[in-house]
Each structure stands twice: as structure tokens, then as C-alpha cells.
Length: 470
Length: 136
Image (cartoon, rainbow over all chains, first blue to last red; front, side, top):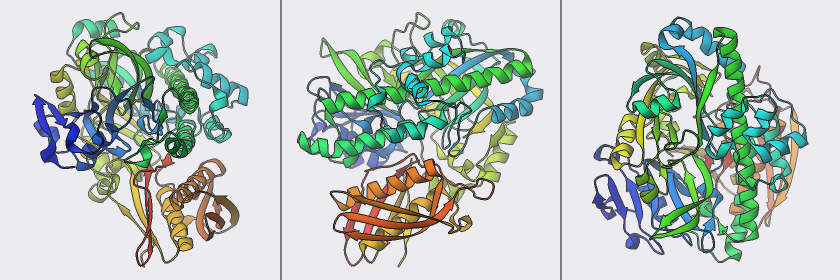
């Protein structure tokens, strides 16, 4: 797939024409500025075109400005499929089901934390299990694990890991309907059981951040964010449980795709008709994994609050918790009519114009790369009409992990963070270069593009003070 | 002949494994996976593990084989250092040698979430080739 095939359809809007590849049912749309265009890979354009071939796809196969090559769907991909004519695809959600971001705001300000940042980062690092194969501190029975799969964050709140108010500040109140633990394999349960309340590794992190700019005072006030205020951001997902659920259903869907005669340009796009039993089973298992992820972030928030109470005799309020790897059953206005669709967001964040949590637009959390800014935004009407209520999910990689390891050292990256007075704690120094800011696109540019496109609007910018790298 | 090599992939880990026959190809792919997850120099050969499985194509057999090793690594904490693979038709039997991980002695490398079907291929010209992408 060549760059020359892209047609400019407006400021920041690039179209992959429907005739660019065989069997495309709709055109593709990639949202990029001139700066971000430099990072676009051929593989990502091809993947946008591949998704456009799937049955029942509505309007466009979309890619957000942080797009990069994934497997099956591109990372940053959004696609909506008709509930009766369309499909469900585990590859359109990804292995880390409900990988997402959560933001807590403390009562503390930057100057109070600064002298004790090292101490606080260390205490959080000790309280929250992180790194390769990390295990949580909870010992769950089979029955309790089923409760996690069914009830999501509510399970944790009922156990005392948080307050009922937290649930109001989660996407879907921290629980997807329709979860069924009997659709989760014994192996997925075995992988998930010891890991609840752990961060994991790779690009997962916990950051101590401070609000360094407010762009929208009205929304920031409602979200409880003031300049210089200290926040805690968590980025984690459904751990081994989600990874295994995706693995199980992808394997099952290889044969099922053939049974339903769905032609696939890439095996990783394996899918089944949305109204089939196989799709219902996958959705029930995916919802269970999504609920596990919300519980996971809820339990970790408890340890965060525990540390804040011990060290500063204070607590933290949940601002919001939002997924960026998920499939949701939603109603959207398509070609003038209301339609029920399965929206797949693979490395993309829901950005609705209405939400119950604060009575205004939905908060959106966009983590930057390690050592760079993160953003709080809100959804918009424009997102509802152009991106099925979705926006970007982060900076998006530019360097492969291999290239990052080759060109950067953990010492260099750590020193770079120190120069910015950012404390870093990790069990896995060798992987620090992989997550270095240089391995990612500039987050400010990505946010600028989604703002100018109007698919979300910036509320506040947060800069890191302490990083726990998973 | 090189056993395996890692290729560039923006988000994930992609490797190519080679073998003069399918047995060697599957053995080398297993070593590439373990090499991604743990520093193999530090793993001894104390424990053995036998794996048997069948599938409907070489690609799917490779996917199942690597997925099984990934789960064994995460759940049983078994790190594979060496293995002997026999493939007859579309059935695989393997004797795996390695060690149960001890985080005081072993250094982990990258956490692998899953084996993907992305561009997964087993091909043959003068030797066998396999390309595998891991989600990390």
C-alpha cells in the first residue's frame, strides 16, 4: 500500500480510497498533520485497508493520529460493525482487553510533594506489584474470580477497595453488561487469578504527575483539577486473563471464519458474524476480561490511597477511568438514522459528547510516553459524527523496541529523566530504553491534531514527577 | 545456518526462525520465544517437560506450540533452554529441558502477552522458515 494512494479530504484528514485494495467495503480515513505524516508506515495504511474489507463495516475504517502498525487492526484503529450484518473480531480489541488509563487527583500541590518525591515514588513502587509476571497481593478463590469477571470495579468497591463514588467516574461504571465467567477458559482463569492488583510490564506504568496547564477552566473545575495539583495516573489492563481470552477466541475463530466463509486478508483479523453464538460467547468473555481490568485498576487505586494516607495523611479522588482496547455495543447516528453497532477501539479512547460522570462531556485520559506530558481532554459532538465517539490513546510508537534498545541506553534515558527532575523506579532497567520518549511520537502534536479536528478538546496538561515503569 | 533473528516491528517483537527440517524449525522458534522472555545464559537444564499436541496446519501447530510454551513460562514458571521436537504429520511431541524460574538468579527480559497470527507463516525453499510476531 503506497503513500501516493492517500487522498487529502480536509485539514488533517487523509482518505484511503475504497478502490485502493481489493474487497474494501468502505474507504479508510487516517487523521494526521504534516508532522505526524512523517511517521506513517505503509504497514499501517495496509491494515486500515484490511479492516475495511470486513463484513458490515460502517462508513470508514478509521485511524487516529497516534496510528502505527499493529497486528490485524492498526494500533489507533476504530471501526464500527452493524449488529446484524457485521462481525466481532478479537483482533480488533487486542490481547490486552480493556487496557486503559485511570487518573486520581490528590489534595496535594507540587511544592508539598517535591521535597519527598523520591520517598513517595519508592513507597508506591513497594505497594503496587509491577514488572514481568507480577502478582497481586489478593488471594482469590474461583468463586471470587467469577465475581470479578461479573461485577468489575463494583466487586472491589463492595470489598472495601474504594468508594461507591468511584464507580460513577469509570467508563460504563467499571462494568460491562453481559459478562459470563463460564465463557472464560480454565487456563485464562489460571493466568488471571494470581495477578489481580498488579501493574504488569511493557508500556504499563504508574505516574505521579502535576497539573501544569489548564486549558478549560470550567471542565477542569468540575473534574477537580487545579494548576500545580498532584495526580496519580495508572496505565494497565486485564493481565494474563485478557491475554488468554483473546488467544483462546482467536484460535477458535480461525476455523469459525472459514465456516462462515469470511475472507480474511490477515489471519489476525479472524472474526465471526456479530449475531452468531461464537460472537455472543466472545463478547461474554471479553466483557469478563474488561471487568477484570477495571477491578485491577480499582484495587491498585486502593494501594495508592493507602500510601497517600500513610505518607501525607490525605486521600485521592477518582477523576476518570477509560479503556482504549475494547469492543462496545453502542448506538450511533449513521447516514441519518440511529443504528446499533459494535465499535472496536484498538488503541483508541471513547470520547462521547455526553456522560453521566460530571453531567458534561465525557472525560478522556491520554497518557504520554515516559517522562513526557499526559492530557485530560473531553469528548465532543464532532467525535460522535466523525469517529464513532473516539479519539487517540497516546503518543504512539515510532521506534521498534529493537531499534530503541540499539540506539538508547537505560543510563542515558534515566539521566535524561533526572535532568527533568523525574524520579524513576523499575525492576526492569533493561527495558527502560524501549519506553523512552524518543521511541514515541510527540504527544503535544497528537493532542494538537485531535483538538484541531475537534474530536476532543484539551482540559488540562499533566507533567510527570515520579514514574513507576512496569 | 542462523537459528533465528529478530526483525523490526514498531509495537511488538517479530522473529524469523530457520531449520533444515520442521523439527529444527520448531525447536529454534521455541528458543527465540524463550530468548525474548528470559536471559537464557542463566537458565540450567535441571527440569524436563513433555509436550504433545496436534493441529490442522503447520502455522496453527506453531501457534499452539509457542502459545503452550508461553503459558508454561507464565503459569508453571518453566523456562525452556533446549528442546527436542519430533513432528510427524501434523502432530508434535517435544522433550523440553530447562529450569523453574527463580527471580533471585534469573533475569527476565520482555513480558510476552501472546503469540499472534499476524503474518504467521511456515515456508520452505532450501530450508524451512517461520515468521512469528509476539504481542509484548
